Length: 361
Image (cartoon, rainbow, N blue to C red; front, side, top):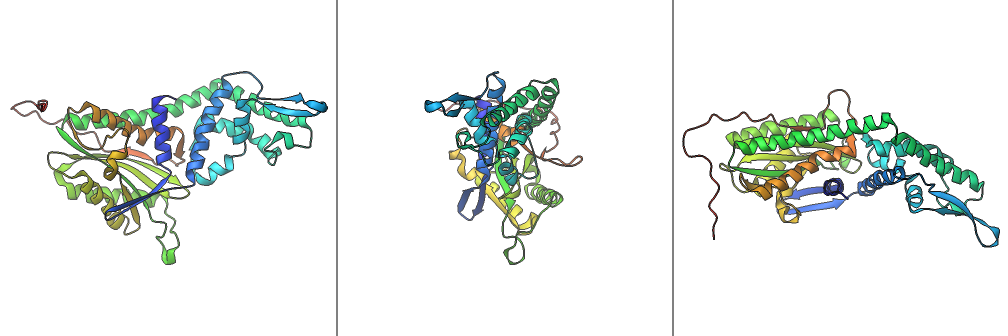
């Protein structure tokens, strides 16, 4: 697996956790969405493997005593393992668009899945075995024909361009912030909603416009509170059956004016939970668990710290590349990803230029 793909898959799995912070404790719980995410990832790889060959994935062989049995290749076994998972995936992600490869799989296997919905094991099938095998191979042929077509290639390239565009935009934004600042405090906070937010513990249904308003309210309060220390932010809106709408956010503060990244991340979370959502919000302070990240790109980062800035780029990957696999289907110009405006270049001041920090021995 490519390194980029591995980081994106980790981000997908991370997105299936629920979280809340309260005082000195933080809790993460894994949701049912994780199985659906693993299915999506498996189908993506499966379709690529199906298209890489022209071989049949299933055939009929004569066993001892003249009995006919179905023989599946490795790809064929994976195909049957995922043939009926569309409804499971859409149960957890009901308002989403999926990657072109996953959509092709759903489209090509839909007829077989409907006709043989109860036949998960071909060798226990008591009907026309040849018809069953032909149906599977027909689904495989459809996958190959669609993916190898010019129309699909255009769809795939357009889909990838949007994900890459957001990633490059966020990288350019981060670079611009560091260009004007010697030290940046980077905060990662996940923002969501309590399951018990309505009357008598009944979950209140929040719409797209509601969560947008709450984010805008948060940013207004935060800018006033941080004053000149606020440098920028980026956000990604997601939705799942267990968590409903939720945000993954990055905030950038001027490290020469603020200290204690964990405290600032907690402050942002509390503003969200108490004020922006009027008591309906929950949050998770990622800065409290910096040691849990394989490549930590949050906390206080010096301008010349190449390693941490590289890790920050990986964190940006988390925020933007998920959309390749899974994105909320929105209407019109509604956005599920955003960042602040590019900082204006500072007027050059006379005096000593920024220098690398002295190396202590």
